[in-house]
Image (tube, one colour):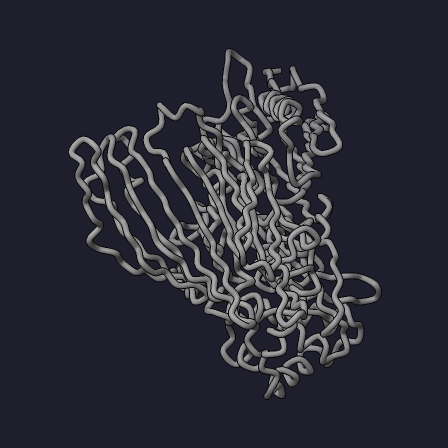
Length: 627
């Protein structure tokens, strides 16, 4: 579900120094005043935005680039932009503003547009000034405000003026990290709320952290209700109001000419008896036959395309695909519901914020034999029965009927749902390590491999792709005899097989040969730089990896050293590596598991101990000695 929220910055951030003297650019002022007027039962909402920035140095002049976003739900007016040069008391106007539309590789369409321009004549000491109005056409999209962004701000202020017969709601997030002052004023007809923060620090991204809104001090605003003729009219007073609005949009879905949809549903389920098998067949048909194209065009970004149209055109966004699944599943008497949900980039709860800010996606929920199954066909490779990885642990708003809904939580998928089994046979031949390896991937491990292969392989050969993806052995590893089985079969683990020649991998010292059986060193670069780190480490999904490596000792040699068992055990992550010698074959068994979706800051030291211990184990080699 594509929506445009103008207050969002989609990049995670990190703290800077508070005196700001070492900065390249700061905001002297970021003020936003929202004026809400109510004429009969129609809202007029105007945002007045004022921004004043200053170049402390001339090192990063890219801050001269400015972009103002809007969509069909808003309108930009009265842009005033100029550069002020204090040393000469000169004001230089922006003389060209370009309107750009948002596209992304032909799989995304949005009516979001941008007014883009460059502040002229910027240099050290120059100030940028920007003033404009945004007309908000949909009162449910009041949005919010960031008190801190990617650069420091001397004065950040949000104010909202609204009639006394209007009630607004607001929720603060992460404001405990700043001093936020609140002031309430009254006029004869209006209330004015003002929130102010001074000297907020800038934020910069951290590797593998959660999305920005989990940490940025910000606020969401929404209109709860208004009174007209002594009658209270709810807008977004609570979750039931949000749901009623969503239902009003669903009521606009085209439900005509569904014969072809029903015919294909009957065709693909005619030989199946169980509801679960029918649901799987329908889900996989939509995955395989409907191309995902994200779409956000006015209310089209909220109203699903009719199932007949999606079937005929063979493309659709999340709403269209979920609606098609809804029609097909219910046609064969499978209990299915349209479901709104937010991705893991959204830190909000329906219970705390009953607004459209909570969700950005739509799926279908099926209830089969008391099992709740979350179906997201936008992920073309996720197996039936597993939700897409990016909605794990998220609240889902399941629409039961026009008046009833249910909030359910999508569970995180256990590590045993995403297992990779690796069986490796190694031998030495004329100084080269010869390897035959078989990988069996299931769950998210398979989803990640297949999706990366489809979208990232590009013009690379199979060998080039695997060399950069698996990174086995060393930079002289050569792949041959590559095969993939069950690549397109979502319900069965992917089997990946190949042979490797690894030159210059062993070390020869005197009559001894040192060889390391850890040609796969998963998680090697996963330690956390703790100093200065503010935010948790995000894990995409839980997983297990199980390795069995057989090394044939060459004739004329014996094993003079075999490493001892090494392990690290924690409830959330760990590993175990063992070696065994039998019939002149050394077998290494190695298991690694991650059973969490987030490593919190107070757990970083333990996480780093885990990675350090794993790296130490990876360095252990066996030693062969001539007989």
